[in-house]
Length: 197
Image (cartoon, rainbow, N blue to C red):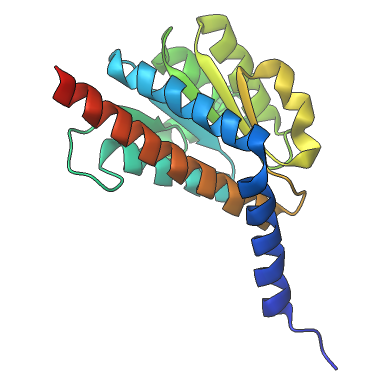
């Protein structure tokens, strides 16, 4: 009898999401990240996002939620996915090497008070680690999203969200769940702050 791979994937995804949802530590980390982003945006700063492959797509997705809207009508806020400018990406890769594609953009675009979301399922992507170092040097708040094999990122991050799995697609699903929750929390906080003025 052949294994039902679709059912297996559904179950694996459910297990990863359930473990994350039941983790008090992950909920606390997610709340802390949401507060950090809300405070930065409220102060007129911006959110920068980086990632490779599927994580690049996730970075773009979340930037769109912040600039456009998540669920509520409200002003647009500043968020930039550093994965989208093909001229910058190819020029930097050509002139400085692929490891510098995000670090160079962070150096040029980020300022103290901004927040950097760094997505890497392995926690070992050299271009992500290089960007985190530059961000730290600039006084940017660094937020990492990784899986269970990425704990080594902790030293480079002010906040680290570790999805409770080492299965890449499930890590990405857990990251998206957490980042959507962050978008919701940020939106509510900033709308409430605007009404209070």
